[in-house]
Each structure stands twice: as C-alpha cells, then as structure tokens.
Image (cartoon, rainbow, N blue to C red):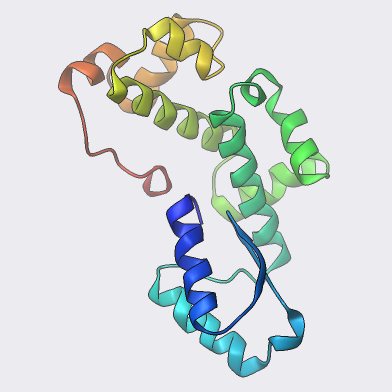
Amino acid sequence: MVCRHCVAAVAGALSDMGFHTAEVRLGKAEINAEELTPDKYAEIDRRLNALGFVRIQDPNTAIVERAKLAVIDHVRNETECRKNLSACMEEHLDMSYDVISRLFSAKEGRTIEKYHIAQKIERVKELLDFGNLTLGEIAFRTGYSSTAHLSRQFKNATGMTPTEYQRLNKSGRIEIDKV
C-alpha cells in the first residue's frame, strides 16, 4: 500500500469481511489472530488481489517493503531527508544497513540508492508540477546539496533538465515501480 487511498481500500475490504482491525497503515494491517483460519486467509488473499494488492508472507519481502516505506518517508519528510539514508534506514528498520541493502538488491534487482534517487526524482517532478517553488527551494526540500546536483541527477534519470520538464508540463508521470 503506497497511499492513504490504498489504506482505506484495504481497511474497507477487511471491514466488509467482518474483521476487526487493530491498525491499518501503509504496508501493514493488523487483525485479531483468533479470527484467522486458512479459509479466511484465502478469502483475504482473493479480496486483496481483486484490489491489486498481495499479502506478504515471506519475511525478507516484508523487510524490503518496510525499506521502501522508509525510503519514501525519507524523501517526503523534510527533516528526514537531511539525515544520512543508511542511518535513517537502520533507525526505521532496527537492523544493519548492510543486511537491508543485500536483501533489497536481491529482491528488487536494484540498489536502495537507485530506488532512493528514483523516489527523489519523482518528488521533484511533483514539486515542479505544482509550479510554485523555485528550483533552489525544491533542491532544499528534497535534500539536494545544490540545484546543480539536483539538475544533474534529474537529467541522468529523465533525459531532460528540470526546466525542460517543467516547460513540457508533463502531467502523466510513469509510476516509479514501473521504472
């Protein structure tokens, strides 16, 4: 689940099935364990699949999903993006960055750093689309050391400068997970 609408969809599906949820948030739904039987797990899987979600059962996949959420939080939280990514990941997941990094690369076929850059570029695109911030303000909000660094990374990722992107006024961005 990557947005509040996803959380609401999962919470609604579980509620429709009669489950009492302790918590539903990005990447996690807690239900009373006494209510779960193999048949109910199968029904949950059918409902989640119909909504475009998959229940994660593999512990390593769960760690990778938690890592993705930590990266997204790191990119979207202005205070977090000032911290070192590896320190932030260790804090969020309470495990060694080396372990997280190896699991992530094995499961995703790319490094956490590449995923982080892709998320940052996606955030820059959103801020450019709003059109009310300067490139310097966007660089600051997204944790870049300078507008030149942002522009170089943006061009490497998209093939165009932030100014060219803004001029084209792209509204249909490609989802980051499709990259």
